[in-house]
Image 1 (cartoon, rainbow, N blue to C red):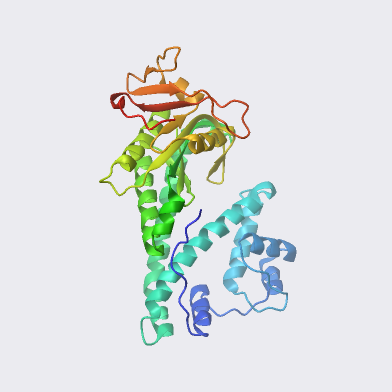
Image 2: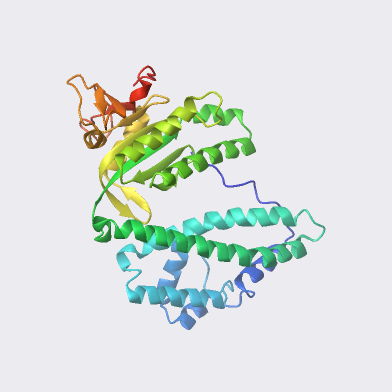
Length: 350
């Protein structure tokens, strides 16, 4: 279940949207889409397709809704296509990803600015002042964050020959899911729910990054992350589960499923049977427990007896094989419940 990024946008004077549009675009709209395509030297159908893929609404040929910034953006897009950065087979997906990401970010940022602006006597003037002071700093900071993530992604990519060749790559995939989210969400008001989920996402993300992992996405009450080392994934999952079982810790109760195997990376996401296995294991896990697939077990367990109970990874973990996990799309999904070897008395069930 997705959580809205902020409160509803406050009502603003009718002409304020025009003021903001002119400010943000650098000028008031003066061009139609036909004129934009002609100036950029791009076929109109290509321009319309890119516009839709970015998530913007339909415009008629006669609508004066564009500016010179749209012309430049279309020229840059055409350049990327010509350079092979936006090949036809991936152009739509990449542009849609840009559109969705920036749409969410822009909505949140605009809500913050508008909320501050309406507190004054002259919202239009206040918003113009705020935008002039804040937006250049936000833009610079976003560029810095983007370049930092580029550097980090380059390090991961250059260290993975499979990913560099754009083939399947070996990764450990983990889902961490809040237990009782629906019940808890009914007992909290909107602000409390957002704060609760934010704490979960922030603490989980920080722990994942500290263990060399990458958060792929957050889905309201669930976090999906990947890491090269299966032991790191198990450590992260158990650390979070232990926090959730601590009555004095506000961190929510969680459960986790982990799978290790080949995945396909695409536009910052991961796909494949390994991802599906981790998701199914999460659904099968009891509160406070961590279930893993055969890939994780084989990678970490140095020894185990026929009953499926034993210490592995230098005695760090103890394993219990489950008799059966019912998982849609899998004929038989092997699964083990793993817990720290020192925690032998704790048994949240399977």
